[in-house]
Every structure is written in structure tokens, then in C-alpha cells.
Image 1 (tube, rainbow, N blue to C red):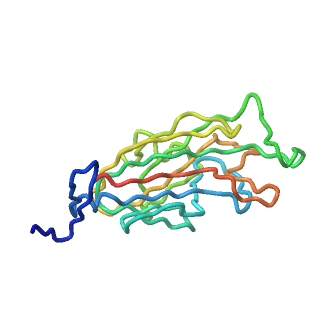
Image 2 (cartoon, rainbow, N blue to C red; image 1 turned 180 degrees about the vertical axis):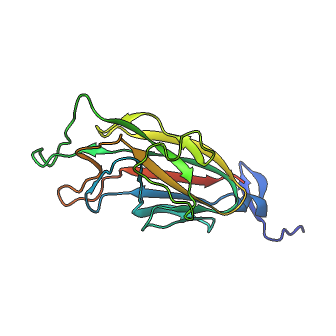
Image 3 (cartoon, rainbow, N blue to C red; image 1 turned 60 degrees about the vertical axis):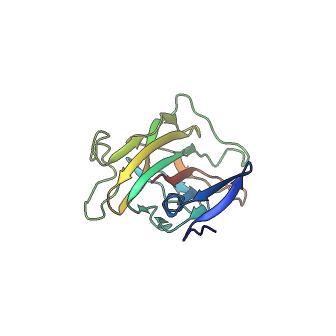
Length: 199
């Protein structure tokens, strides 16, 4: 009889398969979302997405500070994807409707590494340029008409690394909100990040 220490056997189509410890290490994943427990007005420049809930999480290699939106990744290779969107709000608009403007403010999100020891002015759109090595990816163009900016990236972290998701809609985002609380409902997911460890 063969025994496998720290390994798991299972049948797939009648064929015995073995899951090794190395495979188990790559199964870490997490999904963090920013819902709308309250309305939050957008500020000029880059606005950090502050996730409000953990929708899924396996393993200890991914952590999210729900007070700051900072995500910490253990060393490894990672697949990161998700979206970020913003919305116009007008108190005169029906609670079941979102105002649409034309032309609308344009913008996008971006994912970058974060160093708490480095001071950055978020109001300055070019304080960290998009070609800076700390920027992992730039999301697709979007507008403030609740059009999501999508992102998809791969990242190899050689050490424990912090990352943040940001969104900008220009230097004067008048009447634009990162999230809105309407009709007593907080179930409006304005941003989401999906993280999966590949190795």
C-alpha cells in the first residue's frame, strides 16, 4: 500500500489523482468589494477604493484592511482582476434612478503597489505617472455614468507587498460619488477586486 504524507487522493473519471502540497499552496484566493453603507463623494485626483466587505477568502496569503482599502499579498505570483465605477448623484433624481450626463466626466482606475512610508498627494494626478514601476495596470476608460473601468493584471511579488486600487475622474469631479446610499440599501457594489494565487 502506498501512502502520501500531506497529499490528498481523489477520483476524476475513474482515474486516481494526487494533489500535492505545492498545489495546495497556490489555492489562496479572495474577493473584496466596496458596497455603499453610506454615500461618499469623490475628491479631485486619485481616490482610493476602500473595500467594505470580504466576499470570499481562502488561505492566509491575502489580507485586506477594510478601514483603508490596503491589500497585502504574500510572496508569489498573482492574478488580479476587477472593476471600479463612479456615479453622478442629484437629490432631485428619483431614488430608483441614476442621473446621466452628456458629455460626462471621463476617467479610469489603476492598481498599484503602496508604500506607507512614501507620501503622495492624491490630488496631483501625475504625482505617480502611469508608467511608474509601482503601477501594475491601468483600467479601461470609463465615465461617471456608472460605467465600470475594468482591470486585469498579473503580478509577481518577491516579498510581502501592499497594493491599492484607485479611481480618478479628473481634477474637478463635481457631483460625482464613489458610492451612493439609496432607499436604505447598501447593496450597490461600486468596486471589486478578485485575487488568485498562481504560484
